[in-house]
Image (tube, rainbow, N blue to C red; front, side, top):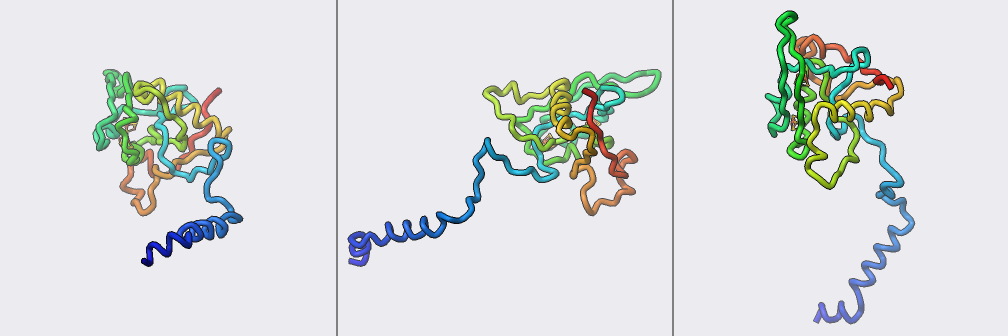
Length: 185
Ligand code: SF4
Ligand code: SF4
């Protein structure tokens, strides 16, 4: 009987209308994307990039493979050669299968020289899997595109220096926040 009465009197309809009128003049919580975009919080984990050193125009990565070892998704593949004279490694292949990435940020944290970045860029949806399989050149290009917006300003990624970490226990290259500057045009 009660339910029937509610239906006859359009109680639920009026309740819905009341809610609509209550919120109609409030500021909307949504934005008109893509015309409007929200500001990205520092440390947002978006598209991957390999830092390009502006002095050498090459990747900063030293091919230590720590990021590939720590990656829980095992989506980083690295190959390198060893220079017998200098005993240093040179990167020959660096690939990330971004569709397998869970954006944990471990690769950024573990990298001793801050060479890998999950940039704050998020608009990289594509129609094929291949476009989200990033090789070294693509990762460097991702960096160039990302850092261009800084126009010479400092860039320090939040996940390179997590709060609460004993700096003395970090690799030398990570102890002091060192800014990265805009890459060469
Ligand atoms: S963010 Fe995590 S899952 Fe993604 S590549 Fe880095 S370590 Fe692997
Ligand atoms: S941890 Fe850093 S330096 Fe080492 S292989 Fe990964 S990106 Fe390169």
